[in-house]
Image 1 (cartoon, rainbow, N blue to C red):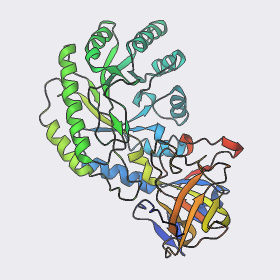
Image 2 (cartoon, rainbow, N blue to C red):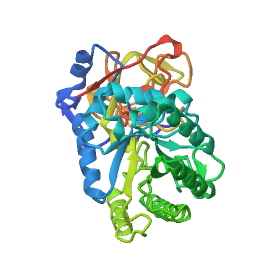
Image 3 (cartoon, helix red, strand yellow):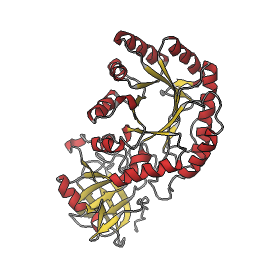
Length: 412
């Protein structure tokens, strides 16, 4: 019986080859692994991070601020590299607040969203001058009580659960019953309550979905966000000081995916900004992005420790796996498992003359990095590269599973 191959995702353009080997920052990956002390290893490219931000800045309206959502990748050297490139940082826990503090980031640049904020997290954020994106009326009142005890005027915004979602988004975070944000019709009353309490009012946060590859869907959603923000501000009776429009920009992971047309999004947003209502004319307008900024800048490198055949199929068994790259294994929100961009890094650019599955070292059939992929023939000792590994890799994967431990990380 013949084995039907499965295509791999598109490898991001611009990677070099040195002596037949994948190279990052001009160095062959084998030397980077040696420099790091072994594999598995995540490598993040400074040049790609910078180029991504430069491209995005040129496409978006100059007025638009761009924040980095650090849940995508909180690696400290990466955060320090991003600090001068972005306008602010978005966090989703007290732990992420401490990561930014440890990285030397000015905490006045930080906003904090996420349901279920504990009192100690609210206390730390208020004391640090972080903007809280409030997820409920109860959270708002707890924040006001804590701020009163601290004798600090809190910086408060409201996260809105809008009455629409983003079409085609990989993960919907707005519209209908959600644990995220305050239902749109209840926001004006809460806004007036915060103003009456004397809080520093910092507007609205409206996030609808993530991992969208359709420019048209994002353009429509941004128009809906601006219209909703105008309605809410009018009902509150005050212009908005700030509007976080969310993000949702996706990256191509799978065969058939295409790069998002950010130029079209920027052009449409510029036209919208030229015709803003009075409630938004003086607002600080921003978007927050995670994977779009850092996802394509990362490569996960893992070494083949065994090559075996079973019932006519070839398996390349590596020293890595889903405990570092849960998303690439298909176990991070994917309904149908598809192959990420994968290559034999030691033979980068060589003809794909073999059909093999790349699997990890864990004792579970879920541990697959590529199914039945056409690849150059690889042997024990060769390195496998999984691309698009700059976001939701090291910290979004169960590194402690089966006692394997975390992967190394480096900024190159």
